[in-house]
Image (cartoon, rainbow, N blue to C red; front, side, top):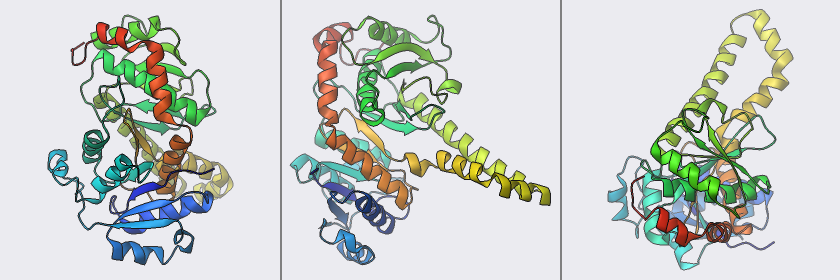
Length: 352
């Protein structure tokens, strides 16, 4: 299989070049066909590459020493889109020098630069940030939006559902992903007018490659009964952080319990295979790689604190989306819904 190379913002994230290059190298050890455009300080990247000989023939460096700060406002970062490692990685996708971009940098800046440079697909008003989350089922679920759009109307949520289902079919193999809207209850009468309008539209739609199953509450999203959870970015970001916090809480509580006495330490040794499996399942690095869906190009956001394993997984997500042509799938599904009819029902920018 031949894939376009992947542009990596080597300067982003908490640890920058070392982890980003190590993650790319790990991804290439798993998939020898991967090729990279490493964007960032050339001297530092070359030093990091000395530890990864498998990257020498598969990587090109685009020098840039300007970095988007982790606390920098998106509006400020946009002014330096043509000089920063993040902006140049995205621009490489726009020019066709790379098929996808991966960054661990500032999420708001990454979204703003991506939308300005790549634009959205026809029929998509706003990109959405989607990620894989672990469940008790046979596969992970997709959740979106996770912070790109804090205020959404019904039209946005319908588009998010279409994009999320297309993504789910790629990563889970489900022919008809089960889609639900995040709500305060599962009853049809629950929720805001926006949720009610979006649900009505999805229930009446025909020809979509998904199963719309109504609403889901936050405490049920990890049970394995839903493949795609759709919400606005405000609620989605809160839900995501609550899930991540609960996972850390469980891990820390188990650690504290096992160290509380000699009997507990013995119990830990006996149960270690089970606790190792739990740790692996809850480790965010094993589910790393959020995607900006709805753009004319593939952009993947790696967690800022991701280690090399996490970065490698984010790279693998980008490659998978290129291989399965996510943007074309979204465009096809949107056409099935009937974009003109959707525009008539929910004009762009109309509050619902």
